[in-house]
Length: 417
Image 1 (cartoon, rainbow, N blue to C red):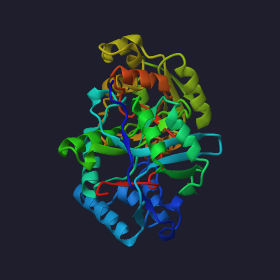
Image 2 (image 1 turned 120 degrees about the horizontal axis):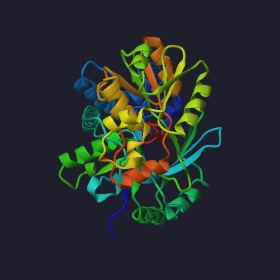
Image 3 (image 1 turned 30 degrees about the vertical axis):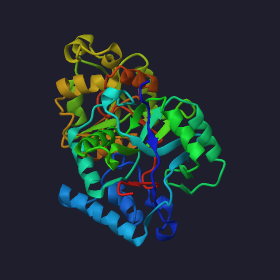
Image 4 (image 1 turned 45 degrees about the horizontal axis):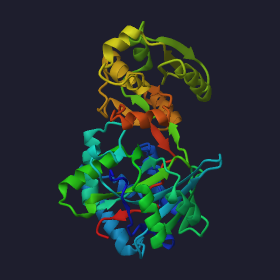
């Protein structure tokens, strides 16, 4: 039988509530969701021990940043700001918001498996410079500072243990400024641990969020002879048979490309309609148009411009023909292969030319602020993502944003433990 998910216990590093202002004030969104620099400065000022000082250290050079993070982690451990739990455990993690969204999953150290094993399925390409950056940070700190988000379809014994665990008192509970309520429990009972592990061993998982961190785990595992602590990486596993995730799009900010220039280059290639409406109404129009085919919203000049009905000859000319039809018809595929590469000539891996932003309103605001172009996308369905991943077909980078994402700072994994 093919080996499935292998989740092991670890001694979690957690903030001592008596040493920080509040647990909420030391948490952060994942490193790639922080909208820099505004969000970074806000988090740094919320508490001197905010986790952002580890996941996004600020210094003049990459080496200095990584060494600063390592020094900060050592200091916080020495001062007792962060302390290791006494016993190895798996952790049940719950997020809940005021709109009825409820997510529960299990945090543990997952055996890092090669792509050929088909245990952990990526669905997006990664940017090598980001992987190199994350790897250098993990080498310096010798820690997994935040879990990546994996999903699987189970609804078995692991789910039963999760439900039974949340009936007891949590290790911690806090509410972050985005309105999400977070709770964390430890699972140390041998029978419960065995139940979770045997259930997960029958499943494969889809990377929902954290492709660059998973690629980093793979790189670091390859660098260190096995067995070693680098054989495992910190993950949150969510059973989407019981707790479906929200799937949102990740938007693009095209630096140095004014909306007028972007629209001029589209003449005769897409249908373009100007929408003088608020953002929610523009998103509704995008959703309607996406039902019929590829569609995008451009913003940055005080209005929205709906792009749809691309010229079929343009798509035939620009989209690779050696991929499945589901991949060829993705909005992200059309955006990258057609618009970015052939129409606007924007290099997709150059931070000087393009930024990837999760928050829709923030993308629009930044475009308007600096006279650039925001490209807003409609989200793709999870079933499409999973099916392409099973076929071994990767979507264009930053195609999806699954959520809610785990808050960084609630539990860390130090490799020395």
